[in-house]
Length: 271
Image (cartoon, rainbow, N blue to C red):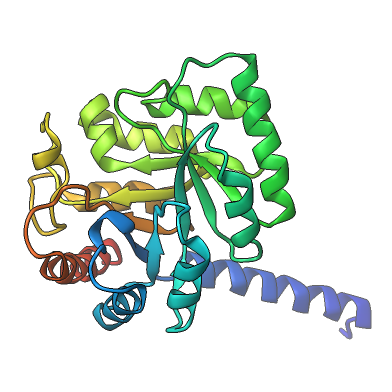
């Protein structure tokens, strides 16, 4: 039986679509990894960029807005990316920084320190609309001790803001400080596609101080496989930041240890 040209075309398109879906399902889970600025404060900007490039990081993130243009230039000169800035709602430097990040698929990691009211929603909406014009996303950053300290309140605020480019950043150390580690998988599944970015570090799952919740990635008794299995399950496609706040020791050595651990984590995630 001969098939019509239109039927053959439809079958061809169907085959391509199925093949594409299968390829995506079988694709390796390999989020890009950037280092937080708080772990890379050594030497000049050029020195930092060269060091991260040599170690195998994809770039830097969680930056302050100070000297942002110079940092972007230094990192892009060696083929690395500036992934994000870290700011608090109300910081007057945010609009300028969004302009500097335009077209770079970057994220504004946004903390909300003060009590939430209608003004909070309006302020985030204003930033989101500005960011959308620059192809920049806003990720609420739950932070211990701030008004938005947990994932669920962040999701509630995101719903009120009602902007497609506003989501949340999952931060392991703050999650373990504020919430029960047993709830990690359910929380990530609940947040789903609204998780725009994530951060991790070596940590003790029952830790109650930053000294044990923020460590090089090869330390701590929290099983990193749990976090990345949960992210893989929701088809996470964002970048992952290495939190380095107040980690003791030589910064370059810590970064080297962490990237080695990261490679092992990815291997386990793809088994």
